[in-house]
Length: 376
Image (cartoon, rainbow, N blue to C red):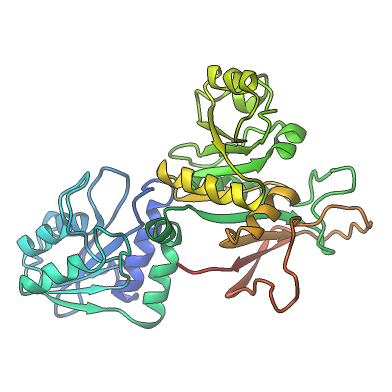
């Protein structure tokens, strides 16, 4: 890296946000973080990001990069996308490294809402004589959105849920018989594999698992690790001979069953290497309980790929945080063709979920709508 030109045409916080993205699919359950160090003249001295769980945090990586380039970060300004940690985990506190390096000023784009952080890092830095400034506006908003799974898990103990679906122009996800291959095009399907590689888990209902016998793995993309594969299956009907069960040793499989599910079926799945979590309640209640159990296992993000029944249960539970909807240039028609969501639904238009933000982008011949329903 040439420290004189690394961010010549980009503000330091924008560069830090860009760097943080490189950790996608590699750092969970940790947050995505980027850091850039600049001197008084605006020259970049060093930059870094959290690359993998257990490796150096962004602030430490940026300090190391500066020193490797022969630059002294003492008195410089560090721009970092998340407040520096002040606790011992897999790595020592970043506040210690910042103080030891003599950084004079730290600009922080986002708070860390987890109980072990929540302002401790900036407080320790101020006590050590470092000027600490909170970024505002677009940078602050982008930093919060960057880590929605981390933020939701920190605040609620439950994973962030993004519903993915391919739809026709008239809002249908399959024919009355269940035929849906392929509504979306190859570019959209490849993008879904990238999302799987970035998510901690992929979830479907048992109807989808039985109909498709899908692997639910990330393929044809660079995947650091495979997601947990989750099936909401009240009666443990997932066949021991299915692709999911057959590959349980290669990528974890979790079945969310009803309380008191058939013991023989439970035992058969467990013997095959599948984890079975029995959750009381039904529909939305079981979704809520299951997400709490998944959160306790360190799962911070779920890509929901199921049909209308499971998607409706998540919607009724208030646990759809984001929608990723591919609209294909197809009109299907038919009163009995499948909708996006089942479940009870909203009792009135006034009571319906209203999107906080919607963006549109082309995906081959499809259009992808990214819909943000909640912000954490």
